[in-house]
Image 1 (tube, rainbow, N blue to C red):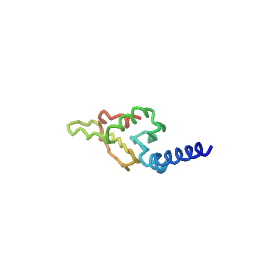
Image 2: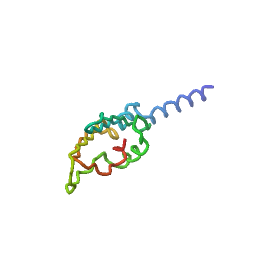
Image 3: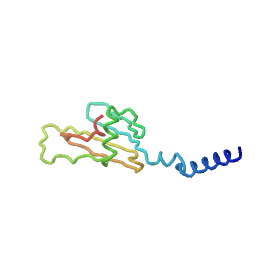
Image 4: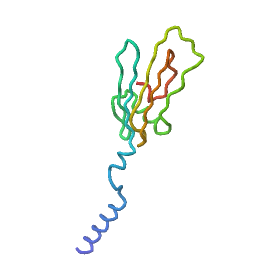
Length: 122
């Protein structure tokens, strides 16, 4: 019995050494974002997104997390050649973390919102 007990204790110690120091390490590298879209004559829309595991109120959470796994969270520039017949400012904001790195992005489009990457489609 002593050999079996020693074997179990040795296996438990080896497992403890191989495991991450804490679950906070995985949490620190998480993607957790709050997106807001504000337009004239409409109530602001706010959604949440989490990755690993995928969740939140973002309707395209799986596509957004897949995009963020390989790319940075950015917004395209405004089209300087676009002619506005009516100024209609659309403001997009995101705050939180992407793979554990803090991010804060804000951009206002004057009249034309370009095709947006998956995280911004909510």
